[in-house]
Length: 488
Image (cartoon, rainbow, N blue to C red):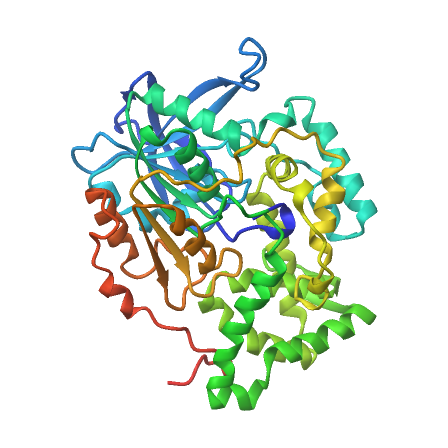
């Protein structure tokens, strides 16, 4: 979450395409939905859906001014639908809900037995006046503050031709969400917020508590959190916990020693002199030349940390780089930067970050020895100096205290929204339950039996109704000790 350099590992660009003619057209409230298909590069099977739109003013203080057409998709319930549909609120900031859903569809299988799922692309994402810039990849070649300022200025200048970037904040998004709720003709809705989407959910809960029936927060972002402030520390804590698994398994410890110490040695060498390599492009297969930098290795570590099954290969990957076999890491890093940039609307992300967080960020020298380093907060501040800023409401940092039934979910090894964040939010909610899933990373609603528990919670609107004993079947992923995998 937060800008291109802190992207969440979630879905890729999805499009509403023409679906088979026999699919039903329907109207909910005043919104008409027609057949469409949601596709994703990360999902092998497309999702049949129904797509519609709803128009809102860009600046609500000027209702006759520029308008935004919000893109909406409906995944119909399998049977008779309950009165309260479920809105999935995507992460980022900068991911579209329609883009993200195909790779997350499994988590909604049980929910869809009783409820419609609504996918509203937050303004500035997906099909809702997408704020994406052709300049997004400039920083891959030059990571200086000067380059960051130039890139941000160019992006803002380009997007300002068709958008007032001050009005693409979380506060604007919750006003859109309530307008769509009203247009759908439903009195109450359920919310499933994922990562940054949990911020959207909590702001909506705070301002419209009487319009929310039940909420699931997956990868919890407290209202008090300044996005980006803890990224470096949280990643290092997650990696330390996952690398400790290697120390507990004799074969891994004997083969790879301490992965964190070995990474630090590699980072020092790359800081002194990046490694010139020949590698094969991960997408095209084309043979290319490139330089491997510390930042590229950090990208691999960070993205892998989101999914502990992938993180279990990191001791082996670090060992291979140390042995001079780094071409695969370079290919993966370039692929991650390119594909993840495509999945995040950087313009929308910067509008949120610059309006809501940048002025409170503090550059912490203590982060210098982390995988991410200490430059992250400073880079955000540099870019935000070039970006038009909206207004952060006076009560924005205050916690939600409404008695709305809320189920909070965290992964034990989450590298960006650790379980302590969920604990903080749950302390203020009088009708909440926080589940921490063993051995899991970021975005856990689809892990193990969690999707069934989520559906049970939405059925009952009682956080204590789901019997969570089945989560005991989740286990830690053992680290790879060689190319064949882990020890039996």
